[in-house]
Image (tube, rainbow, N blue to C red; front, side):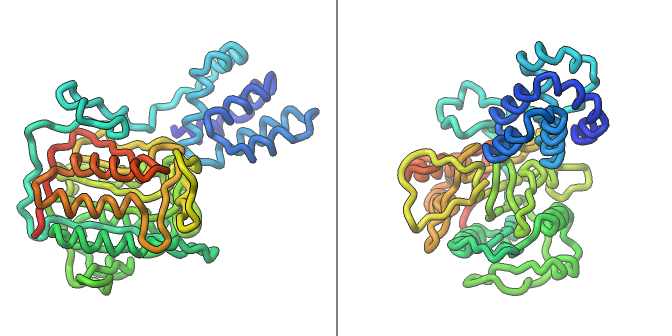
Length: 383
């Protein structure tokens, strides 16, 4: 049973219990960023005599935020000491659900921890390197959300898509792009890209474009996976989520989880790299926002427990990621620059992303974050 189902099924008894001190629960969920300050103030302003109304609205708000927030809420009810003391009945309410989150990413061994910044977390398999023998090396997919359904435009994102097209085609990838997708369209495209890609008609139905050397044009023939896979998502976002053009959220862990290896998966045992340009909150880390910058507004980052995954986020949790409206985002432009400089010298991808961290953080405002699970050395070479 999912966390959302558990909350829905236990709603009546949970509301009755939490009415004993609804202000404590409201304060706690606000402290944990499960609701915004505006939502907190709205809930707080409900008729003070209608305690049950407070709690009903609060629980409904949590349920409507989706599975991730529901699980966070259940975890809060079971682990917070103040809540456990105030509501002892919760202990026997059967709120435990199997964890839907992957196990925490393993820390690096002491042998290489000194080389990792605090924003790079994971376990790299030492002295092992992915073999890249296929031609092309693999597929690079770009989901580029520029124009949203309400008319909002993410200025500068076309520069990012073009830069990614140039650098990954230079590295021997076929670069495909899906433009302006709602959340359901994003998810359907990801499911297809996780398959064997043999259905050309389906790719054409998805209106997939391909980098031709100067621009993105119609698809240039059948596509198949190679020895590596790269997925770049350019959109607005929130904490642990990226947004479709309908402003609906898709969890980062849903994006990566789509590519979890199975016996039938064409990507099992192969490196899967995700580059995500989207905010993870609204905070800025330092400095003054220039007028030519826009933020990609945007739960913690989760990646599958399985091996061979690397996720690089434009910014750490709770913070904004910025785009120059003329030249593209700091993060993606730095990734492309560092790939161009590091790949001819034989640098592996994690080392290159460390350089990205350093470069972006020197420009203030944001610090990228890299996480990976049992990831070997990935050395990409110009073709």
